[in-house]
Image: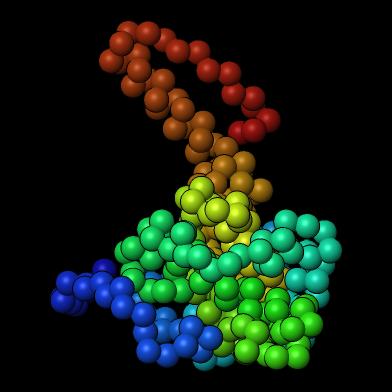
Length: 247
């Protein structure tokens, strides 16, 4: 039976910046505001790391013991391989030209959904572990320690971005915030922190050749039904070649 939806007051969006600093990583996982994690069976099929049953609202995300080292090594590897990654981390001047271009910020009023601040969640960790100023001056240089709370913050905000690249169009420095989102998701993937909306279609494609997970015989039946319907409506017999090996 479908879950009964409680009546709630209409959402009011307040664009006033919160009193506390953005560097505080507390995230409220309210129902309907976050993506659900990938099912272990799909992660195992794709041979993804650390498959398991967990929910974002759980206190324990069942992270591997060396999760912090894994993230930092993954960041180091990507910094060495992608010049654009390091460049986009270094050249942002926080002008805010991208702020009101994101539909997630417009629709939520959450400052951390501004592309500039969403990327800052990743950039602050980069400063702490990969820049001299961040290692010496810490928070004064906009650097943050990598903690489980920061990791949960990454999951919450980086999977809200749809990578439409609208923010990049308005960036005077040409920073591709979409690429930053992809990098953050790659780092989360190293710990098995994936969302089902992405992993299940990918798993289905490998298993059945389509993202819906339709088996070949069911696909053939669907095509045959469509052919019959076309003939009934138009009188035209459509010939479709389907290899028997796929059925």
